[in-house]
Amino acid sequence: MRVLIFGATGNCGRYCAKRFLDNGWTVFGVGRSDFSLSHPKMTFVRGDIRDKTLYELLPRDVDLVINFAGVQPSILPTSEKTDLDATLQSYVDVNISGVFNVLEFVRTNQIPAYVYTTSHRDYEEYWRNDRFLENDLPPAINYSGDHVMYAITKTSAKMIGDYYGNAFGVRVFNLRLPMIFLIPETPFYLSHGKPAMMPFLQIIREAMAGRPLQIWGDKDMVRDYVHIDNLMSLIELCYESDLNGGTFNVGTGEAVTTENFVRSIGTVFSPDPNNVVYEYFPDKRTYKCAIYNVDEQKEKLGYEPVLLDGMLRRLKQALEDGDCVRKWGW
Image (cartoon, rainbow, N blue to C red):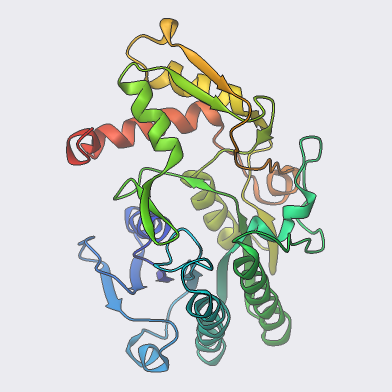
């Protein structure tokens, strides 16, 4: 089997490529940056999905296209505060025009299946502690903040993909992503174009050092904490299913509180879990709640999500396997 992965140089794309290689697939990857994964069944093409000449270099006889490609605030070198014009243009050019190019490649080459990773920011106005969100709600975008154009463009690209699925017989699967937890190549993301350590890795680092752990904001706010293996599972299950397509939230249905999340990190990562000091800062801003009903995924696909404890233990193992403490200077 042959898969073509756009956005293969991102954290999720790289993990996905390795997963498919481990499962015996032939993998073709596309990305804008360097790609370090070497494997006899792996071919990488460096390029930009906005560039139509890229598609002349790609294989046409593939069984599945997975599209992780796109821009969001955490990877852009600019922001709406530092360069409004360039930032807004990037969202439109990459997340809409670039994705259109990918879909045209799928259509013209009659590729039978397409998986698109869209954003859960299209659901932001639904987010609250007492509501598990279904897969098929109408968009409800929050039109304030720094994720507005990101949400608009990702939702638009999803809708274009749905049209291609209906009009041209492609099996189109949209996977709606919250934050996906994995051990990345580097512990940093971009905040207004400047590197900052990922907050969950900062908490893990503090726990490993035996320092007090801070619990910010509403300690009882709930959200789904989603490991990368849940995303990989849903990609595989969608492709292997007899469904013609669909949109599924990549969630757990667990609804973990902020306090439970931090305390669980203390239990798994601290050298002395029974004596961790927890400090509460209710006035500090935290990420909003977002929880998802995954009953349909379980019923139609046989989905069995990795929950919080399993996620943290997999992260710990990945840190050890990657020698990250040494590499990152922790």
